[in-house]
Every structure is written in structure tokens, then in C-alpha cells.
Amino acid sequence: MGPAGIRTARTIEILRTERGLAQRELAARVTAIGRPMSETMLSRIERAQRRCDIDDLVALAQALLVSPLVLLQGPSTM
Image: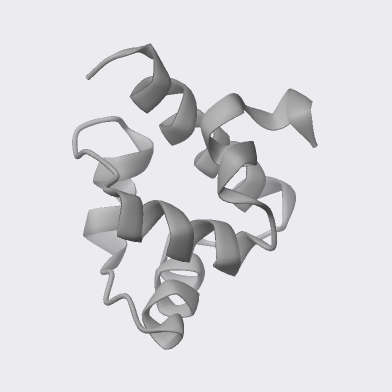
């Protein structure tokens, strides 16, 4: 995984914790949006052990109430 993937993974984790969400809660939000995601999948994305594809990225951004660009560029862009 390259620097953009690692930065995205870290940003997802930062935003999730800032919002006080457990991994299972964020995974449930993403699933409710229509992109099935388990807590394990989210954990692997956050640890940069699983790539976050574009559909995951868009759904995660929607669930976190940010632009997908924020997830790609990092929390300093908010």
C-alpha cells in the first residue's frame, strides 16, 4: 500500500474516533448507506491491511459526513 492509502486509512480512524464512533458503529452506518461493511473489514482498512476501494471510500466519507477528498488528503484539509 502506498502513501495515499496509508494516509486515507489513518484519516478514517482519526475521524471515526473524533466523532466518538466505535468501528462497529461506523461499519453499520456504511452498511446502512448501501455498502455492506463488517467491523473486521473496517478494522483492516484502518490498519492499512486492506485496500479501501473507491466505493468504500465514498461510503465511508458519507458516513463520516466529509468529502471523499478529505479522506484522501488527510484531516488537515477539513
